[in-house]
Image (cartoon, rainbow, N blue to C red; front, side, top):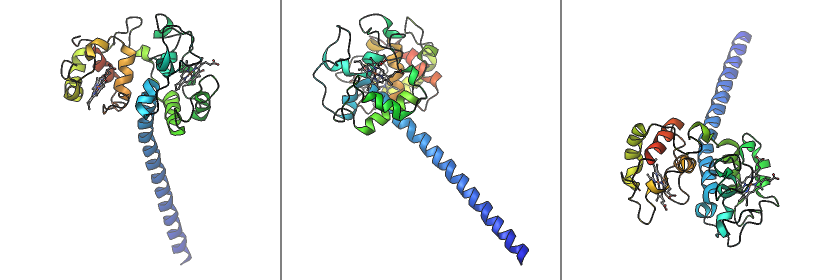
Length: 240
Ligand code: HEC
Ligand code: HEC
């Protein structure tokens, strides 16, 4: 009797630990999946937040914007000060009309998202809750901490040409993208042909991975980075 009880208790314990471990696993997987959607949205907010969240477009020039080349709402885009490659003065915006001398956000990879959220709300950045809600800031911080890629692995500097294989990228473009964009990249009404913007490799990587703010375009973070690089190589062959 005693022996039997010990046996059944340990069976129950074993079952409980299996359930607990299973629960943890499912929990971790759910978090991982949710994170990619949050990271992608953070990437689109980094691109042009007022298109993504429907907030009012800023009218003034950002007080921390040091350049003379841009004014008004453009200077409120994260990408304008920190670059499409997130490398700021050390990346694609080291020279040319977008150069500001401001550092990138690469140093924040892996950092605590609450600390990054505090930076977005600090006296330098001045993003108010009317511009970016706390949920928006959380997605941005998630993107900065967990969603950046090292562009130099996929894009050649300073030509900004994709290092991918355009022939391999073509089949992805023509099956995933062409329904909206056309095989020539010219089908979206009132939009620039993709061939006219594709030379900016880092920008193309961001668009394919995270999608286009406010548009129904997919965020293809689920694809292998090499495939994304191949797609971008194909974009760079499209007619202007
Ligand atoms: C007008 C220019 C400007 C814009 C726009 C801007 N930043 Fe910054 N950001 C700065 C400056 C300047 C610093 C450096 C502050 C310092 O070194 O004290 C900085 C620093 C940072 C840092 C810390 C960098 C590091 O890793 O050390 C993060 C993270 C950051 N910004 C995120 C963002 C995000 C996210 C956005 C968009 C919501 C944004 N920034 C928009 C100017 C800008
Ligand atoms: C459901 C439709 C849809 C799909 C699928 C789609 N896109 Fe888009 N995409 C859009 C729309 C709409 C825009 C916004 C065009 C604009 O306003 O310039 C856009 C914008 C873009 C831009 C930015 C253009 C610019 O001038 O800023 C690029 C690059 C792009 N798409 C590439 C792709 C690629 C590559 C794929 C496939 C991997 C893809 N898109 C799939 C609808 C789609």
